[in-house]
Amino acid sequence: MAATGLFQEAGAAALLGVLFHLVVCQIEFELVMFHFMAASVFGALGLLYTVGFLRTAILVTSFNTALLGSIGIYRLLFHRLRKFPGPIGAKITKFHAATLAAKDVQYYKELAKMHAQYGDIVRTGPRELSVLRPAAVPILYGPNSETRKSTWYGQTGNDPKKCSIHMTRDFEQHRVRRRAWDRGFSIKALGTYEPRIKAKADLLVEQLAKSTIKPMDMTKWSMFFSFDVMGDVGFGKDFNNLNSGIEHPAIQGVHSHMTMLGIMSTVPWLLNALGSIPGAAAGYSEFFSFCAGQIREKHKTWNSDKYPQDIVSWLLKAVKENEPSASPSPEALEDDSRVVIIAGRQVHETTATTLAGVLFFLAKHPEKQRKLQQLLDKAMPGGYSQWSYEQVKSVSYIDDFINETLRLRPALLTGGARVTPAKGIQIEETYIPGNTNVVVPVSLIQRDPRWWQRADEFVPERFGEARDEMETAHAPYLPFSLGAYSCPGKNLAQLSLRTSVSAIAQNFNVAFAPGETGEAFENEALDTFTVTLAPLQLVFTPRDASS
Ligand code: HEM
Image (cartoon, rainbow, N blue to C red; front, side, top):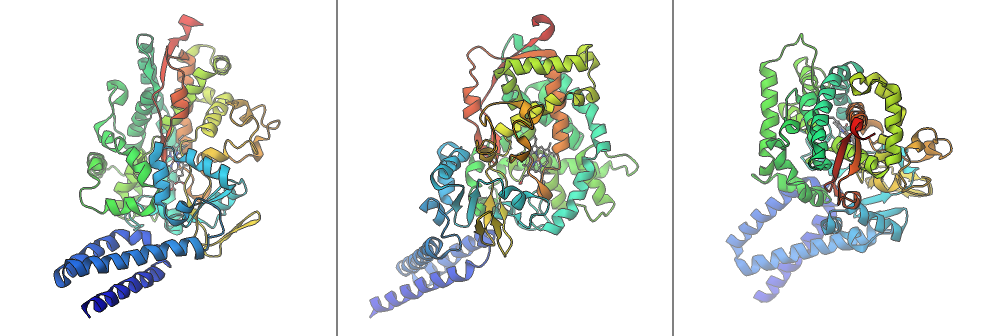
């Protein structure tokens, strides 16, 4: 009799598990996963206290087995994406992606294998598709796109009043807040950053001159340059990386967590849930308190008559003047200030990885390096002492070099996922249902030989004199993303890159250090949302001494 009762209770728990799934599969459950997990633990403890261990174990097991079974069957057989091809594991759970990412932290390579096996549109998660078609680019990322930021952006919490612009999923709130950011990147604002960036480039040149004694790891030094620029232009602070040759302590903690984050952020709710556990973000505490301290200091020394000299001051100005574009709370302002250095919870070292990429290609293609140097020499015959940003901008080959680097080595390998509107979207012959997370794998589409001639070769000329011949205008290219959520820092990044690359190419001949082949740098980039690079040992020979 007791056994029958227990059996009935287990059946009821299983039924509850299935019903629970049927209710929650209608909502974005990822965002309340932490609350569900916490409630489950308390519920199980309550049961343990009232009905004892054996019955609790049976009830919990029945509920969870039925819940997971129901989820698995639904996702495989009844889900609106059931007809899309992809690995079975990916159709059932995003932990499949986490397992692939954990292999070598090179998810983009796993994604390439999946596309080779399953075609242009692959189901890479229960409600996620990866689409390798140029037609998808304007539909997902174009200025008129009806898609929105996907669940991935809920990983630091989903309250638009508290999160940064990058994690703001509400379209209207995002649009209004972007104005404060865009002011910090206006032509006039960039004009105030320009001499300070040149000063950092001078410091870098000084340090590189020492490489004749000892090769320099340019993965590291590109990072030092770019963080010093962001310290100055972002906060009005000297991070002192270039002088000391040591990473600022506030960013060390963030850096050491990148691999783990690269893996965990493949599961949209995991970081959100872990981040809700007190103490889980301890690695970030120094960085968080650094940013909070900077805001406090700026509040104290605020002078409303002074033209803002850095990006955070532009954001603070919007707050002080009660602008609609202002960060809506002190928490949101702090999170925004963190975006200057990191996006989401990943280090925002996009400019650094691009600079290191340009230096890699300079060393790998000496003939292209010479071409760049000759063009710079022609524009500034008096050498570096005659350097001017106007002249650098007149050398369009420098932009071609940067663009080609960003094509072959985009700083965001996979790109941001977007969620489709309720009515769905049509990409050529394929209808993609509503409420689906869709991503275009940037690193794959920008190398696809169907749309790029000599796709794997480094040919900067495709963005310049060979543009028509190589049909560049028709090929999918989106290293800064496009549309409403595209990078507001693009012009600043270009300013930093043009300044540093021209300074290096004018002053030095760049070559691989003895024993360095560049292979590890080329092939072992880690996919940690933004990319993490292998070391790159280079030597910089002063040009007047060698050429
Ligand atoms: C070569 C350098 C850079 C590249 C390739 C790059 C690329 C990107 C991309 C692809 C996105 C879209 C991310 C997404 O869809 O989730 C983005 C967003 C963003 N970037 Fe950059 N970025 C660069 C430099 C910068 C710099 C220097 C800043 C200055 C702070 C910056 C600030 C931002 C911000 C605030 C966003 C979020 C925009 C929004 O959600 O509205 N970026 N960037």
